[in-house]
Image (cartoon, rainbow, N blue to C red):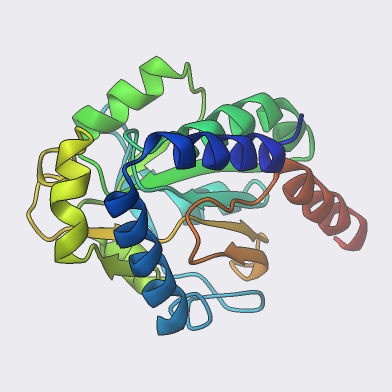
Amino acid sequence: MTLTQDLANLAAQMQTQLPEAAKAEMAKAAQNLLESGIADNSLSTGDRIPEITLPDATGQLVSVSKLLKSGPVVISFYRGGWCPFCNLELRALQQALPEIQALGAALVEITPETPDNSLSTTEKHHLSFPVLSDQGNRVAQSFGLVFTVPEPLRPIYQSMGIDLPAYNGDDSFELPLPATYVVGRDGVIAHGFVNANYQKRQDPEGILMVLKNLNVTA
């Protein structure tokens, strides 16, 4: 089963579990985010990425520009370990990691969560790639991915046990759109996947196809 199928199954399951009022509010927020055009205005194929140096889950600084000296880099932005859709994506990327590395590429995840919370996610899912903490969404802002969770959604998140200020270490209620970028050694985005619908993610098969094409044209 592909990540896309797993995500669709999870979305269907959640629809049966959420109260009607919560579903209506979440659907409204999703539609507003879609209509905002944020996904269309984010960095995309052909754009050059900004400098990225962030701490990993153990506090060690990771520089994407240094990783690019050895090969392409797959950069994936996710909302947090509290998001079940993100967790499915993390699991799928971990499974695909050997193939990504065999194609000469590195993989990094970026989240607004604190390093402590990133470490919990890393350990829980046995991740063997860097999970970088972008507190304040500085890097995500430079990619044009950041939005603010609407006030009506905040108590709904809280009722579900999602305490964003605790996870992210601030009370901005800002999150990045989930996004995946395959970046060539020249720092230019060879492929970008950004969707305002957080239930949609780049399937690893698509990442591998782009990396194979990069190897052919290199």
